[in-house]
Length: 342
Ligand code: SAH
Image (cartoon, rainbow, N blue to C red; front, side, top):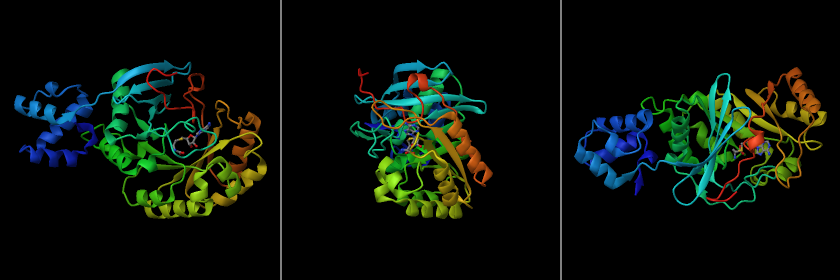
């Protein structure tokens, strides 16, 4: 059966035409799905009973069930959702002073193989549909009975490897008649799929692009992130510069600091050289050690020195607060969990 939350408002209008219904019905349905967050077509009381029945024959609402919810001492919540086909995904909710941020997954598993990430080493199953991405936000808002203000595509998966569904999900999340989350409050994070960065620049969606950079030369970056073999640093930086020129949007570079690997002053100098003059921001992440992983966190002293060097040399850099590490919900710690698995 088709999933109704996979459709943008425009697509829903088209589908309703084939059911010989007026387009404004699509807006009513959108309101029920994303503002009222109903769980069945029966609850859409301003639609005729016959339309509700027709919709129920054609579509499912595919509401997620929470399999497990863990809460960190810092208030971060990690959800394990049943995506209704025997698979499960993780979603994280973080509270910052500026509001509630949700970290959504875009795929079940990941193909990128980054050496420092817990999502690596687990077989890739499939990409999530647009509705399954959107449903993570709905299910969390339902659970906390509050609005989410920011969305980051930093859960499991490579969002640009699921390009069309991610774009569609952003359009649904962003729609004023839907969840109404401003594009400027949505960040898409990529390991660096260069052709897709060019595509994203043409979408006219003012979301934030985050690039997982982590190293400044190809040898080191390839050893951490195999995707660098396909799209080396020069091509990646060129794509970023073109993206900035086309969108006038600031790019955020993620740099996870690993002890004795990419955290010394030489690395900071090389980073300044690489990013000098670009409209960008650097987000330093103390790397989270994963099970059997070979990278360990830099010392606080090194992290601060690294940040200060960047700031003193014209690159705006901040250190990301570590949230949820006690429940394995911090950056890179999410992994696909099987139903009933650990
Ligand atoms: N595939 C996308 C989004 C998922 S990862 C990407 O690569 O950007 C979200 C962020 O967490 C990325 O910047 C990623 O490099 C980082 N990350 C992954 N594992 C990490 C770890 N163990 N410690 C710190 N950051 C990590």
